[in-house]
Image (cartoon, rainbow, N blue to C red; front, top):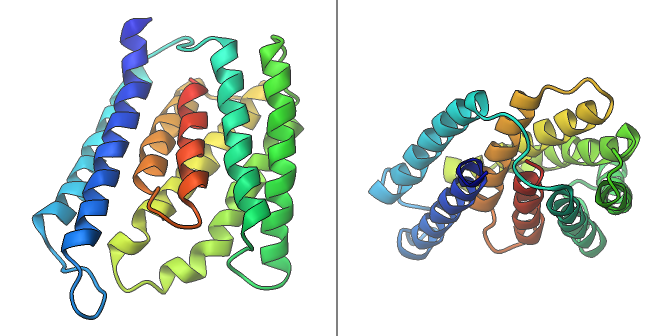
Length: 225
């Protein structure tokens, strides 16, 4: 059990290391125009750490079997994820105006409610209905679409890469979580997605609109293992 617990812990620690590196990068390597100095060792260090992390998650997801955390921890993770999504959706508008931005907010609120009910079911030893876990998947998919135009307009890779990868990882993680509830899950793929989401969401949690969303979603993904 202790050996299996090392994978979620390593994902969190490596994600925090990447986040600290990015914070230092933005504090020390911004030029007069507000852009990062490209090609600095610290910037390449964040990319190298991410490649190493992905290699570790691929290897770990193939070897590890069985549960790492009990239902009480999985339930706590779902509740934490509900707080992150619900708080962000209630406090902030969507990035896109009109229907898409409103859909992002509505799905965020619905996802928070569904995750709270899922946490209740899990705590009592019941598998949540897959529809409860489908709404968070739809939220992250819309989050990707809602933010894509803003990310693609960024002139530097560092400005959006980690948020993009975090969102993609959470979309995969929530998809495999919902599929598992419908008896169509793929445990190894879910394990990889959860570890990747834990790392990239932590690394993406720079101060701003998405900080709490990404940090709490990282815990949700890692506690699900």
